[in-house]
Every structure is written in C-alpha cells, then in structure tokens.
Amino acid sequence: MSQPFYLTTAISYVNAKPHVGHAYEFIVSDAICRYRRMQGRPVFFLSGVDEHSATVEKAAEEAGQHPRDYCDYMAEVFLNLHRLTGSSLSDFIRTSEPRHHDTTKELLRRAYAKGDIYKGHYEGWYCFSCEAFYLADDLLDGELCPVHKKKAEWRQEENYFFRLSRYAEAIKRHFEEHPDFNVPVMYRNEMLALLDRGLQDISISRSTTRWGITLPWDESNVSYVWFDALSNYLTGVGFLKDEALFNTYWPADVHVIGKDINRFHSVLWPAMLMSCDIALPKMVLVHGFVYHKGEKMSKTIGNIVDPVSLIEQYGRDPLRYFLLREIAFGQDGNYSEDALINRYNADLANDLGNLFSRVLAMIKKYREQRVPRTAGIDGAFQEVISKIRRAYVESMEQYAPHLALGAVWDLVSKANDYVQKQEPWALAKDPNKKDDLDRVLLNLAEALRAVAVMIHPFMPGTSEEMLKRLGFPLDGGFPLLKDLEHAGLCAGNTIDVGASLFPRIDKTK
Ligand code: MSP
Image 1 (cartoon, helix red, strand yellow):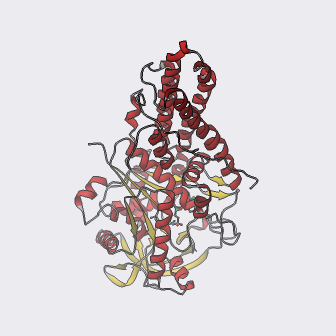
Image 2 (cartoon, protein in one colour):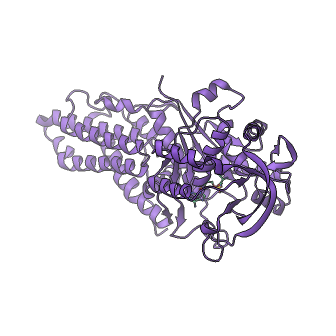
Image 3 (cartoon, helix red, strand yellow):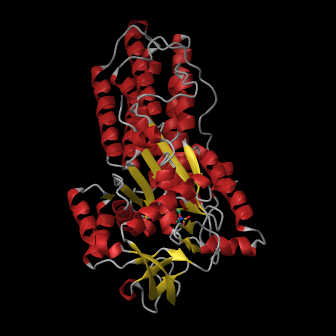
C-alpha cells in the first residue's frame, strides 16, 4: 500500500472572523493534500479551532456570550470557510471536545511524571495577542512585541512551568539530523539562532480562568494555550482512542503554519513530545503572511480582506489560483483586488480558458466532437508535456506550489504556440492533411488532459470540469498522476464544448 500522508493546519483562534490569511493557509494545505491523493496515497487532512485562550474569552465576553456558545458559533464560521475554499478535510477538531481534553490531560500527566512540569514564579514580558512571553532581547524598541508591534506588558505569575530549557540540546540535535524538519531554510535558521541563545522554561497554566482544560493534579489551574493547542495534532488521528488510525498516521508528515508560530511548533512541540515519549512530526512547513496592498491587515486600519466575499464575487478556484500563484511559498505576499482581476483575465480567461474553448470547438467542428484516435502522437510535443510534468512534480515535492503552477502555465503557453504554429484551421481545408489534423487535435487534447490533472490540487472544480468535458468523468474521485505517464488516453473520447470556463471580468464595471 502507498505510504499514508498526514497533514495539519494550525488551529485558528476564534476571537475574530477569518481573513484571507487563514484562507491562504487552508488553500495551501488542501493543495498539498490533493497532490498527495493524486499520487495514490491515503491522506488525512486535519484542521480545527483553538478555543481556550484569553483573547477568545475576552471576545465572548464582549459578545455577551458564554465562551462555549460563542465558540460553537465561531467554529461553524471557520468550518464554513473550509467548505467555501474547497478543503478536502478528513476531520475538523475543536479543542473544547472531550476527546481532546483526554489527550491534553494525558500529555500533562506524562510530562509531570517525568519531572518536566513544576510550580514556579515567573516574571517577564508578555504579549497578550501572542499569548506568550518574550525575552527582553526579542522585543522591538519601546518594549513592542515583534509580531504585533504592540506594547508587551511586564507580568508576574505563580503557576506551572514546563522545563523547555531541558530540551534545547536535544532539539538542536534533531534539527541537525533532520535538515527538513523545519522548512523553508530561512525559518529553520531563525530557530537555530533561537536555540543557540538557549531556551527558557515556559508557563503552561493559569489559575485566573476556568475556560480550559484543568490540570490532572491541580484542579485550580487550567492548561494554557500552547500545551492544549499543539496536542490537537495527536487527538485528530485518534490518540488514546483509535490505535489503528493513530499508528497509520502518526508521526505527522507536515504541520503547515504561518511564520509567527514557528517557534511553538519547531521548538516547544518537539520538547513536549520528547517529554511524553511520542515520536516527532516529520516536517514543520512555514508560510509567510498575506498582506493587503503591502499592509498588515488589522481591525484598526479597517483593511481586513474577507475571503467569503471574495469567493462570492470571483469564485473559489480563481481565488485559490491567485493566492497559490501570486505568493512564492514561504515568503510574504500581497493581495489586492486589482492583482486578482489581472491574473484572472490574463492567466485564466485568456491563456487557459481560450485554449480550452478553442481546442474543443475545433474537435467539434472538424471531427464531430470526437478526439481522433488514428493518427498517433507527436513525439516532440509529448516530450514537452512529460518534461513539464517532471518539473511540476519536482516543485510539488519541494513544497513550491507557485513554481508548480508556473510549470503548468508553461504548458498552456506551449499549447497555445502549438495551435498558432500548426494552424489546424488551414489543415482542415486540405483533404491531404487529414492525418496531420488528427494528430494535432489529439495532441492538443492530451495537453489539456495533462493541464486538467495537474491543476487539480489548485483548482479542483475547474480540473473536474475540464476532465469531464474531455470525456473523463471523475464522479467525485481524484485524478491520478500516473495516468499522465500514458500518452493518448483521450483518443476516441467524445468531448463536450460547454460554456466558457472563465468569462472575462470587465474591470470598468
Ligand atoms: N491558535 C494559534 C495556532 C495554534 S496551532 C496548534 C494561532 N491561531 S491564529 O488564528 O492566530 O492563526 C492561525 C494561522 O493563520 C497561523 O498559522 C497563522 O500564522 C496564520 N495567519 C494569521 N494571519 C496571517 C496572515 N495575514 N497571512 C497568512 N497567514 C496568517 O496562531
């Protein structure tokens, strides 16, 4: 059997509605999962919501609701965004669920038994929005949090601590022995620098709130934020509950996260797992931030981009395409409506949409809607398709979806050139060129099949529609990459021209 693949996203805080940054993380993660399914691998794709935090408690209070009611509502809002963005989720976890309480308590119990949790007193710089302490060195001038640029506060606490400091050396060794543990490399380097500076123990409980998971040995404290958040990745694949599922999917292959929470995933999480004698995940894959026209999105500026309205206006696949193509994975990227419309019109309506309509219209007109089966394959053109398929696979293996899409569009443009060069309309006028026309049409249909399969991770709806019109109904299944190793599968298929895939957007309206 093919090797199972387990991918997680960060679980979102539910203190505010999701923005386009959340949508980006869902979409990137979904694209990777779909690609793995196209390789024939069994995939478990987990996302969810992080409900126990002070910011969530505050948001519930402001909404005049009990945190539970507030979270019920917000969990649905996030799940709905997954539906709208097309996430092929296997499960959606809420940290307030009993199954997750059991996991967190077990981890706390194990770490406590190891002597890695102790009661202590702590003072330090605390960022309320990060829900984390910072060293004075980490803060920007004016004691500002490096992520939120808000003033950190000096806090004193009496609660339980996790001996993170004990694991600094072991984690460093793990980084050295597993160069792919934390990628891309710039984020790995940041973590190595942090490890070099040494680690401080971290506070993991609060006695001031009841909204959370109580510590097994001290009911007056609840677990705080990261301990009960990171452990969701275990709960999601049946930790303590479903041994077969857990053994199939753990350790996770990829944790997809944004750059602001790398240290929790690449440093704290491995330490927790080491303390609890659980295998470490294989990769923490870090993406950059999506900005709005170069600016961080914030309520105060009023520039938050709502992904739901973008999907309503431009459609799911165009938004997916835009984000995956426009943002070089790992780096920060920008959203603007103008850039989205430009890409839509140039890449989707013009390059891909026109090619598809044109080729199908010619097959309809010249060959009674059937892809010719007789004249054989054009070796040189097939080699172009194979080469691009290899570049695509290589980019996907390196988690560079923007480059994979670049490769696919290279094929789209080569197919457009092929049409121009071969002039099928001229061949159609000459009865002696019947075989040539057959060959050209078959090759173009094959190029479109390759494009349709390769865009599946990025634009699943468009991929399915294209394949259906080319005579390969998927019936809800996934296309398989290995089918691209066989040339000529379109031959003899009845095609369906249908409506334009991407009608042009008129910017003036
Ligand atoms: N609850 C924690 C994660 C716990 S994981 C065990 C959290 N939640 S969050 O809602 O603030 O962020 C969820 C994810 O969205 C994180 O990976 C975060 O980096 C990402 N993003 C938040 N803002 C973003 C952008 N503007 N752009 C891209 N991703 C961003 O952190």
